[in-house]
Length: 280
Length: 310
Image (cartoon, rainbow over all chains, first blue to last red):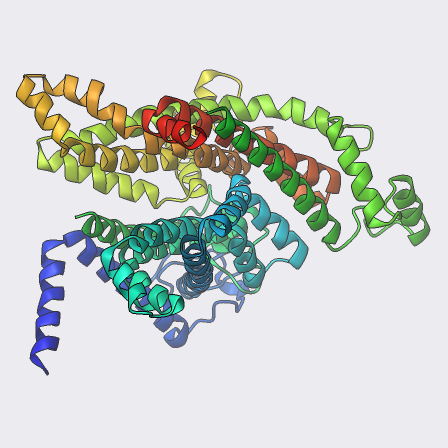
């Protein structure tokens, strides 16, 4: 291990020790991802196999979260759904992040006229509540993860684009950017090698917050019954399925809700602590 | 300033137009006809479609719809012929607003109060607890909050009724479940903004001048920290409208949100279109008003636009 590497590792440890929120968030998220990956692989129960003999059984050593009205093991099902929710969140956050960074960078760097036009377009798109697009697009393309991700990409990138544009505008006027320009470095290289890396802080924070937003939307749509369709199930779908008998078997709804909320909390913890570190 | 106002209004109108076009196209692209109920023969479906003008070219349909839209006519419901979409909106809109407006007020008051407390409290414990609770609340989806409140306060404890909107007590749970998320966001916004403001030189100067803490916070710092909250009211109203979809269906409230969810299940195309355009228009209007208000109230923005014009 080189000295540099060791120092970096020490820095990270010190950072976690100082910021308990980030540490708590990372631990929660780590456990969460581990369960979402491992449970579907290792569990003796399938997420979709129905078994009429064990309908609506309460949590027990065999079925940790109990079973639902079709006798499916909820522990396997919830963690399978959690994985799917996380996948939707990550993919749409990545797509939106890329679109947003590109759009914002072009808008901030291309000069006044292009900037004005691009930002007007963004204003128009963002003036309309994005949930409406998402719902209409899922209705057109049919329920499923792809249509939710596509729907989220209509308007999800705008905040990121605005933030990146602001950063680029600010950095464009700095001395090092001018120096790079005088040296004759091509604009693209200045943008990608000098300006964007300096905007990494706000970009990361926004990216982290994009993930829970997407998971939120997906759960919302699945809860309305127009999200992920059977036999696949996201956390929203499982909550929706439990709704019809929530008065009798509330545990069927509480477990997926809890898993969803822990995920949100972990991501929010990490996002806020990063945000605060940037402000300092 | 006038130029800015006009520009913003034009953007709003353009957004409305884009919304109407996109909605029309997407609804036309949706698979299946609203009249295919299984038991009806092909001929009947075709006849009914002719009746509604669905067999005409798309361009013609679009122009007719836009023309009607300009006159404020959103067509009639497919599911329930004889009922105009505008009638449905008129009937349900007030109910949704009677939940959304109190929710917004509660969110702003609670969010600002806790935001101030988080930013200026000398007690570290208070600050930590408020930000932790805020973060947990921001992580609970609206429908989850509504269901949990329903299970705890109306099924278990029986403090509040579970459905309908007959008395003020009926409003408590839906309004709270709508207000939780925006309140948490507003708390974060005020808290962050106020924290930054409190470190500025003018606060130090105020203190040197001998002003009390309350006066510094309420008449000086808060004035500079309200801008993000005002900007958030637009997105918050969008959140409340979409939140009403689930909250109204959970608490069985006959508002616009439940109507929208029903229209999706019934594939009632004109109703989906009409409600989408109406809700979009409300949010666009709220965004426009808060934007203009912000620009008018903020001397820095006002001056920058005057310079640009002059």
